[in-house]
Amino acid sequence: MSGEDSNRPLKVITIVNQKGGVGKTTTAINLSATLADLGKKVLLVDFDAQGNTSTGLGVLARDRSLTSYDVLVDGVALSDAMVKTAISGLFVVAANTDLSSADIILANREHKITNLKRVIEGDMALFGRFDYIFIDCPPSLNLLTVNALVASDSALVPLQPEFFALEGLSQLLLTIRDIRESANKDLKVEGVVLTMYDKRNNLSGQVEEDARDNLGRLVFKTVIPRNVKLSEAPSFSKPILSYAPRSSGNKAYQSLATEFLKRQEV
Image (cartoon, rainbow, N blue to C red; front, side, top):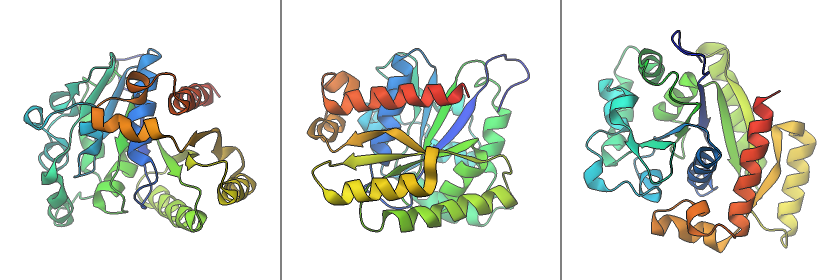
């Protein structure tokens, strides 16, 4: 996606998995923060009514006067709703519980799956200012998630290595294919990143092997380990690079960000 007035391309990426608790929000926060720390300009959109991404980046409730609900339902510009974070180059559009009713409201609208796409394409202030927009989706394939995928260039899928992981991934990939065929022909799979990986667990290794056999280079080489510091960081409203820079969790997200950027060069 690119703007007419800018030489800087803008890439929109949805971070998605219909299953909760797989490290989706952790990846949204820490990949965005790490890319910003590496000099990229990043806007992170919180599309989950729980607002964990917003809280994890220190956006207080009083600072959420305009949220992703206002963007999606009322067409407020992302550039008007975004707020700064403590990480230079990283902005966030926060969410709150208002977003829980957006699905019902959108269901009755004519352009119910293209609202976000129209908002982004019409917000020229984004083009030339940001390199990436990441959208952290709710753990379901509802209209919010569909709006995000329709508006995106690609989808990034965090995958926890557990028994039914690949079955759920297959369902998600079918949804992405359907959206590609019906509403966004250019939608691609950015990649699959294994999260909450425990090398002591034989199942983690088996799921990784199966994923790499079936999906090949779509699976990032970097794996995100199960790490106490990663779990603690959100309660201090900090990304892992600020909370525990020497942790294995931070090293993993540094590696993922580097690998992600190399993929953009291909």
